[in-house]
Image (cartoon, rainbow over all chains, first blue to last red; front, side):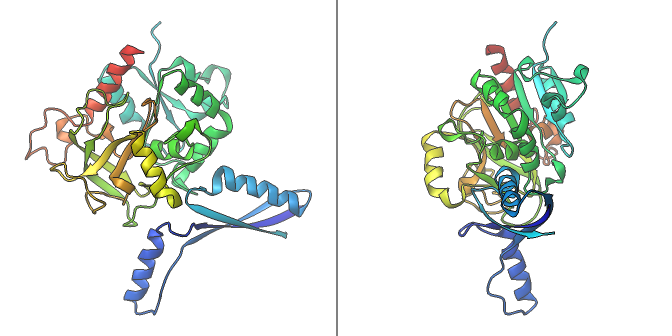
Length: 82
Length: 270
């Protein structure tokens, strides 16, 4: 079966989001009443697996091996039938 | 036949391998450019190389795989999937593993640096986006904090002017910043720190600290001192005229040369 995984990678609380802070400052300079900006990276991955659970297991492995650095990032996975 | 001593490991995107090879050769260390696939066995037999035929593995700077995901992470993941155990054994045998810029990012992603408690394979630190959010490509000043296999000839406290060229060089331990920094200091693993030309540490101040690195860290080594990673590029200042201020100041040679001379000196002993 084909599944679509949406992987959301975000910085852990307390880790400075340099890009988010720069965008925050820029939006304020453009007069938007912005309080905070966090950057989040989203990967949309299409994969083959026997079940939704298997798809999640595969993607979880990919997050641990490559997509997220556990020192500074948290990740979450959402699986849907493609 | 004399063996080639240095394996300069490159892949798609690295672009400092030629300078790094030349730097080694200038100090009398034979070097070979080796593509990652030549070590992982993903090439024809005649092109395969064996890590244990060398005495130093150097991962050069540049980029790798577009620096997508995180800088150095794809390079590291490919190493991890095939030859990480070999590299660990190579290090255990007392041979040298170095990383400059991208190489430092790779060694950190591999968990070989800082390598607390002999662990590897999972990162314990990160080299992440510069606090100023910009690519920094210019000379910085470094203070040599402790000698290791790569820096034996450099006096402790000596100030070197070496260029950086990176967008992701901020060394941090994330939520473990304080605890792991203390461990790093207790283990005496900090080799280079960013400083003012006077030698006073940058104290996190930009532009002396170009990326916002914790404790002004520019380079660290493992506990044994035979694995080193650093963001600045010593291979870019082998000669005096490669210093940005060479018309105004006296440099007999480039400040990076002594780094490679130190490695050459150490290789004679192992």
